[in-house]
Image 1 (cartoon, rainbow, N blue to C red):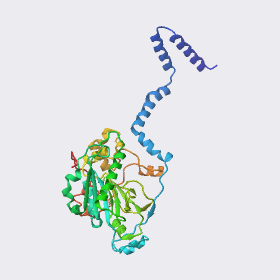
Image 2 (image 1 turned 45 degrees about the horizontal axis):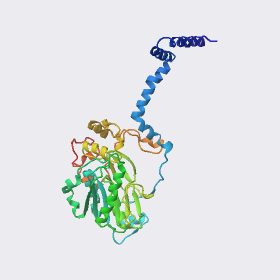
Image 3 (image 1 turned 135 degrees about the vertical axis):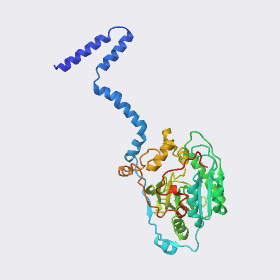
Image 4 (image 1 turned 135 degrees about the horizontal axis):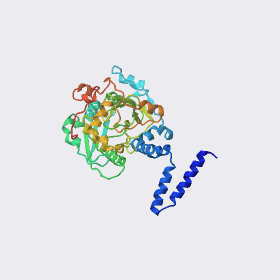
Length: 390
């Protein structure tokens, strides 16, 4: 029999003898000492260092683990059938429609641009100036509630004078929030989109008019809208592939933004929504500038207000200095990994978004007023400080 076994047996016998002596409390303490005496250094390391560290890591970065391993349990959605997009300002509309396999109409369709508005005044200005030549009626619905049930001022109503250039073509409506605490934010969002359907009917939309369904920061290019209003036989529902930017047009992410769509309106059938409604998408159709705000306070407001506010897992995420630092680095406001479906894409997009120094093919109004909107252009990541967002 080995010496190791003999010594261990001797220690066990001694512990058993000691634990059997004294009062009940003394016996309990003695038993604990005996148990601990039997642990080696590796066991102590596991119990008091590695396990607490692991629990802390899961608490701080658990969401990253789930996002990174997403490809193991979730498959990518069915790919879109992407239609090549042909455009040059010197090519006739008849030729452009023909290149897409469509005929040309004798007269263009009417176009309705409908949005839910929160507080994105600058992007709304850029959007409406971009689309102004081709939109028949601008439709805007504003609520006194965020999707998360927070009260908010009617920002557009307070700043209506800034948008006088669309006054003759504007159908504006307001809706009171329901302020349901603890409710899923997507319920309030759906409630407001249903109200936007009603406002569209008030605006006078009719069969076969074009309806643009997109958020304020999802801006179709003017030539895309002009093409679709002139061409015949276009798909009844067509998603728009937009160039995806973050914080400004300095940080180009990819061209995977697809939620914006254009519909040939069908009474009783067309419903305003922000999810996939077709398998067909037109390539390179505009810009999506997410979290593109002038003031740090606007970033804070949106982080707390929009449907994914649960991503604010820690209060320091809302620290203005941190937000400014994140903007200039091109990293993620919520310290999240990319929402992709393959390990290759997740790893390829980890880290800061690369800077782009191109300001080519951006909305013309933005470049015509570059000094006013310089924070949206490359090389201007510093944001102005403001306590409110009016």
